[in-house]
Image (cartoon, rainbow, N blue to C red; front, side, top):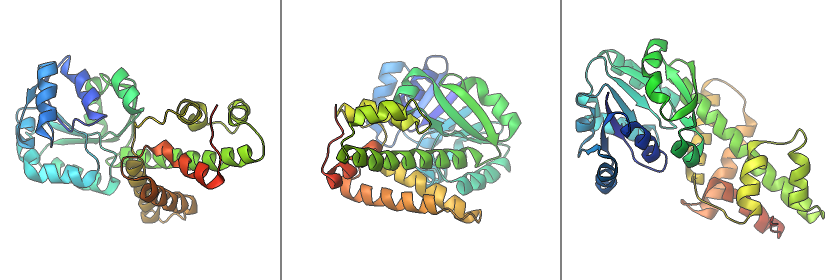
Amino acid sequence: MRIGFLGLGVIGRPIAMHLARTHQLRVWNRTAARATSFAKETGAEAVTTPRDAAIEAEVVFTCLPNSPEVEEVLGGGLEGGLGPESTLVDLTSGIPETSRRIAGRLSNRGIGWLDAPVSGGTAGAEAGTLTIMVGGEAPVFSRVLPTLELFGKRIVHVGPAGAGQALKAVHNMLIAVNVFALGEGLTTLAKAGVAPRTALEVINNANGRSFVSERLVPERVLSGAWPRTFRLALLDKDVAIARDLARTEGIDAPMMDRVSELLHQARTELGEEADHVEAIRLHERRAGVELRG
């Protein structure tokens, strides 16, 4: 199959690696050196414009920071390169309303659309075990599913265009809530004389456990490793999407409002390159404790 791929970032690059093993792949990246390096390593073809990535491709993937960037590359030539009966699959964690608008525009030309944001981080992308939340028409999903299976383990068609991105935004909002709740809870317990590791052992064998308590805090916070795999700035963006979605749907969502405020504050204090779990550092600083050992 001829496939185009736009966006070779920390998630996009390992996904494209899986595709390059079995398909003819053309890649484009805003920083051209990344596409050139990828092509040398995999045998894919590096192209200089989004349009070139889409010409003659049966499926084109975009994996970009947000929906405005997707619309930018569409208007910058990608849409003109897409042929009838091709499919654009957007792996971006983006804005549901924008996806619905793009899907309608492409449908008028006989081009399929799927919004298919992923979860699982860089480790899941490298292992090919991502969870993929797909919005779009069922026949288009069925047609593209074998390609998604090259890098995803759990792939679920969740509804019409925009539904995948809606679910991803709410999913990431729940991660943010857990990060801040554990930061508050564990620093409170540390001040009260309960060792963080002991507290987590109890929580993780009771009903308060979560992915954040079971994996992220032990591996990153207690260890002091603080790896950077998913920027706090991107989580801030995703939670803002979830908050705006709730408002659009007429939902009173004080939890979303508050965690969005907290993320904005953390982003300002920690900077654009901080990892999302580093928000717990702010709780440590304010409480005057370190959650280690």
